[in-house]
Length: 251
Image 1 (tube, helix red, strand yellow):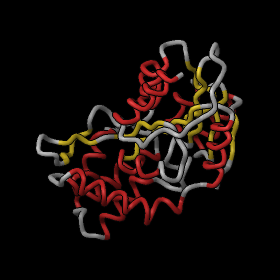
Image 2 (cartoon, one colour):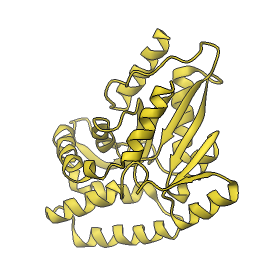
Image 3 (tube, helix red, strand yellow):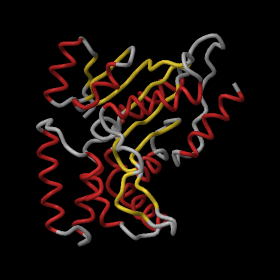
Image 4 (cartoon, helix red, strand yellow):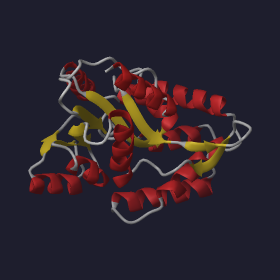
């Protein structure tokens, strides 16, 4: 178990997460159980990237032409139309292009403290704590920007997180390019599988519980033994009812 915990800590450092929260130790011959949570619309009321755009707009850091394209993307997202997830995040992050990573991260921490922290759902915190007490690892997988997920760990006791990272250039300044892929849709499940295999080894873990609010969370929810649609949109709600998934309302 000591070796396993070292792997978690190393992986968490790579994802910019704080030191993992201690959890109970499962039986040595049983696979590690994961409880995986989406963030926006699940753990919090609302969507943090959208809130970030409004925050930057009030500060005069978003051009009207950029805002129009972001709004058009948002409409397509609600209608479940195909879209370029990396493209819209590049638009949002244009405000930080050329800014030192540490400086931009500090501003996003302040944004979280002022606008996101108050939107955390008490049921999300309660459910995470229950899973930790039951000996499960609590993971957060989110399309939000990585600094926001990092800051959320001061309020939510997840052990590990995967969130969208933006590329930093050789001078330590942010670019508008996504590093890898946005943590959205099927990418959430792929990253959970990749990191869990690296930490525990293939076959030594399973997704016991998964929580999501949006139709795009279906791959992650479908991979869980106990999927839960949290305050879902109409499309996911209909799908969850059809599949017999748990539906909870955390508003």
